Image (cartoon, rainbow, N blue to C red; front, top):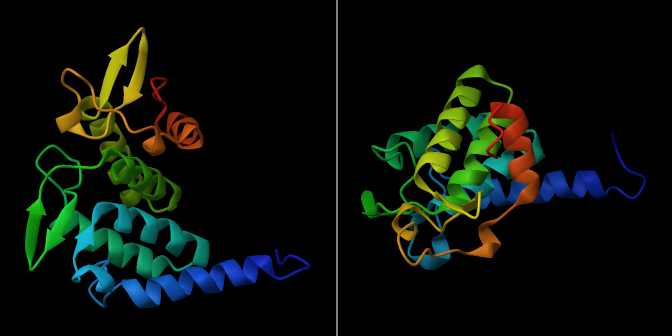
Length: 171
């Protein structure tokens, strides 16, 4: 539904503008102002913005590219891709978290399956138990002692939605 002041239409237009500028024809989300590389956080933002813009085609292209080029053997996403290859295979948990949620919100069964698998990989590889609670670490590389936490990666609304969509109460 449209809002009286046109905010929803402006938000859709802004999301579409981002997708036009940063998503290549093959679905890669690139940073033209930083050497043309791709980071997993950019992928997660593009997926959310494609949903905000109602652009299912861009969503599918971005996810297809990321799945082919960033997915690691443990089911997470490599952080950095440049010059035709992964340059830093370490995942960033914020990108994995947001990507999992976006996939599960897409409405397509294949995306929902991929989102649940990614969410399970985040729980298995990017969380640590402390005082009976799970904390999201910065990535699998950050789960040792001492644990490396980045509170800016924490999104309680995402945890609630992931719990509901996965049925996993650990979220």
